Length: 384
Ligand code: NZQ
Ligand code: ZN
View: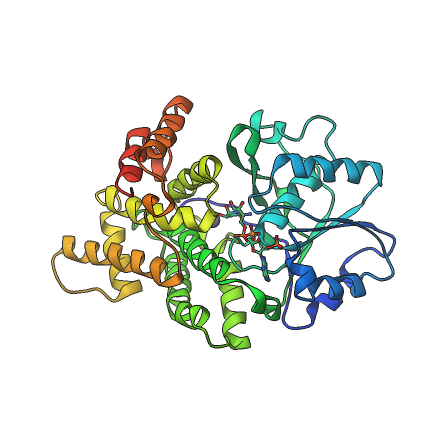
């Protein structure tokens, strides 16, 4: 296990009706910017619950944050924060709204152009306090200090993070998930799964505690997936377990002291930036390719994953690894995602474009930098 320091200060308010408690978490004199997306919260009643909870506050609204939030949108909200002297930002929606709100909170406390956070790697040292009412289990943005920002104008998508970007609190009410469309259930089931394996499926170097946490959470997803994707109504308890599994998937717990991969996410961000696919859609395409092309480096952990997550214990080592890759791909398909670039009308061109981007940047990705630009090419070409 590697040396590490760990702190996660996010307070969780979990369960039906918890939205009504947000006022006890925000200073009564705060001027609040309420951020949200394309309108799902207005259609499912969450917006009304939030407005009711904040009835005694000065609230300024900023809606219209798109999936894969764009820098140009956050810029407008940053100006609003500065002009309206906002002192608390409350995100209501999915990972995109939460991430955008982190970017806005940081940008509101920065004199320069907030794009500097990604282009010049300017360290984020100050941000407005923020809270998140999460309505989409996937990113764990509600309980971590990171985000991802897109810039369509230049076809870019970059992660950012800072210890000052942890939300003060996160509200998780499983009943808000009842209106999630099938496409977003699929995206979530894939994204959470891939967060867990990106932190886990590297080497077998004594990560006993976090390995078993990750394996258990992966098995939750495998068990919950058929219930979440079926046409019958999902029970409150299943929604609650799904929601908590998502939060624990990327709140830092399973990554403590562990060597981590993240190559699939980095490749996926480029595919989204170039072709506009949803985040989960990119991961479902790429992850089976990463497992296959990097199978030598991941050999021992792939066998552990096969045995402990999928109960695959028969056959040669190669057969067991093949089966584990097939099972993983089938889980993505069953969740409702497509698993080939060609399913979206994409081909060799995007594989080469993404690989060339990594080549020109001159750094490798994956655990210990094992995924070179040429491996990126091989992985993506194997997924056409
Ligand atoms: O915009 P609205 O109208 O709210 O609709 C959203 C959006 O269209 C809808 N939705 C959310 N909750 C709903 C709902 N519809 C009905 N009922 C509900 N309860 O779902 C659509 C997708 O939402 P979005 O927020 O884009 O999805 P997700 O949570 O998957 O977030 C994706 C973004 O998060 C980044 C991704 O790269 C992408 O930009 N990530 C953030 C991470 C982090 N902060 O740690 C890690 C992840 O790996 C990921 O990269
Ligand atoms: Zn993700």
